[in-house]
Length: 393
Length: 199
Image 1 (tube, rainbow over the protein chains, first blue to last red):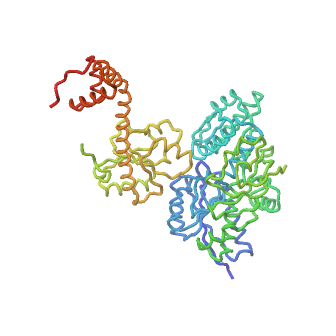
Image 2 (cartoon, rainbow over the protein chains, first blue to last red; image 1 turned 135 degrees about the horizontal axis):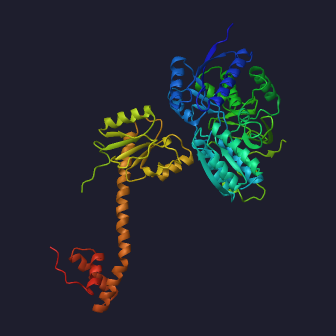
Image 3 (cartoon, helix red, strand yellow; image 1 turned 180 degrees about the vertical axis):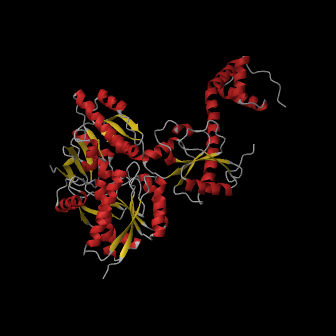
């Protein structure tokens, strides 16, 4: 007997400024769909309906309207940027559909019709800033792309750093896609900041990291760099030498130990080649589809209300470890991790929370008064619900 | 002086600084229903030098926070902010523009009239308050003059401070002028000026 099929919308841009990341996400979504369709554990299959907004922000609204009207999808996995997600929210709210959003973002949003599977700011930025304050420097030079991600990251960094008595030495912005970075590299080399917080995205970031590496090598300097977004495929694009040594915060690295991840990486490489790499956003897209499938199975229906209820607190042992949806805000419990990019375009994880951390999209549990008042600071000093820390490497 | 009621929006001019075509069409339709005239301005461009508009509808997400011309929008024309992103960094930028009212995106036809009325009303109150403060500041500045005039009358007529001030106040009322203006005249004349009674 053939299993009933459920239509599933997949919205990823195959061209435009972030096509590389969206391509990784699309591949992961299709891998998850194929695994579910072949699995005995699910008594239904997904029929994927792909749409490509080509990186044009208004295209996301059109794509989702079309998926809902023509393909009758109840669930859509996709979007990468916040601008695209905000295009989709009105239509999923109006038509009572669910958007499963894989990418980390800057927070301050909580729609009943979005399941936020990427990390919230308390899960990506806060642990990284804490690490910087505790182990590198209280003074930092910030460089980022001139859009919402950087603006909000810089605000969070500034708030935490100044509460700890540190200083923002500079805040430099580049337009999205800008690769003329020499003036900023020159400034960094001249000022020799104790740390550089990099919230550039895409080609701007790659160009900056290459140029800074070259200039710092010439000058005999070693300037620590921090990032909340760097991932394995990007290390390859940056190049083997310039990509090494960046301290990165993420819920997923390909190098995570554990049966689920080893098996996931092996299946991925079998599909896409031994040279291919996983990324946090790709893995997160896979988790989106899996969380959805498991919620449908638990609900016994693909009805949006039933699925939302079934997804709440339903633990999934994913490649990145246990993940479940917090029904308070539709974001996910995830395990924050810190790693250092290493030769071979991989990350060496040196810290992880010992349990998944509750999402706090509005940073309402960020307790700044706890910063700078304790001589030996730890992450749980600033996130009230934070868990104990342990060194894993 | 008759002032337009904030409830009557007909005939007023709105400048739409927006990017999203769908939202522009919603706003344009509703403003036309309300009898307002409409002009449009590209958010990527700096503000026009002569803003003839009575109200500005500004898509807050369409103007980069750090752009040079962002703060040039700050002025006397009330701004209705159209808000999509609720991050503190964006809201701080918005607060610096002192919006008179706001709407949350996605826009619909409902809510726009309320936003307009609140914007016109708060702009009017802001104007009234600014005028009131200016008047108070003038008074504070002229206190020194009033004090000097009181002293002069006290010495000239050998009366108490209370009586000197009462005399100045009553004379100012009779002359239909302010205490501050009369005080300046007392200092200039070296005593109570002989001034014909106002008609």
